[in-house]
Image 1 (cartoon, rainbow, N blue to C red):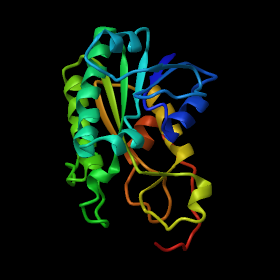
Image 2 (cartoon, helix red, strand yellow):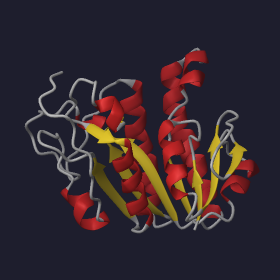
Image 3 (cartoon, rainbow, N blue to C red):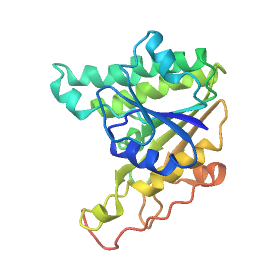
Image 4 (spheres, one colour):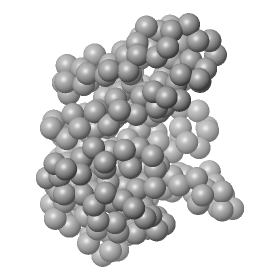
Length: 239
């Protein structure tokens, strides 16, 4: 399968590319130059022009990690607007190019932070409406989901939305304060691998590691995607 992965400079994209490189042909992209990637690298601003069409051409699936680069946010005079612009305009441009070039499947990485304002004791499923805060990371992901949803519901391309928990590695978790929203990196990679094998016009899945006290139910992802998280954190660590 020919796969395009965005946000090539992010830790998630690097781990995902490392896991997929032997089975698939990869193209990675980022807003700034990135070295030492698995596969071919193409720098792209994800603009509304022919270069974005060239970026996605011949791809079967796009995995849009959609992580706004922290270095570019720091340089921006309006970082909140920059984050929203990246998740909306750039995502729209990527989807438009994907549809034009016949890409079959688009996987968007959103966040479970959309539900942080719900009570921690509530069992929140994919059928619940998000309650995004005005924090730019959360609000921009919420708007990014809207952008993806419209393409999926119009039947132009299959779109899968993975709402991810808070990423952490198993090593880092050993010394970190316990977080009921943890998503261990290997489990995150596994979720994307599962999503590659299952597509429909528009689907949302909650993705986090499963352990005693984990905040979100992942029953839909386990049933539909066959997602089987393996991470179990050290017990008894307090925030």
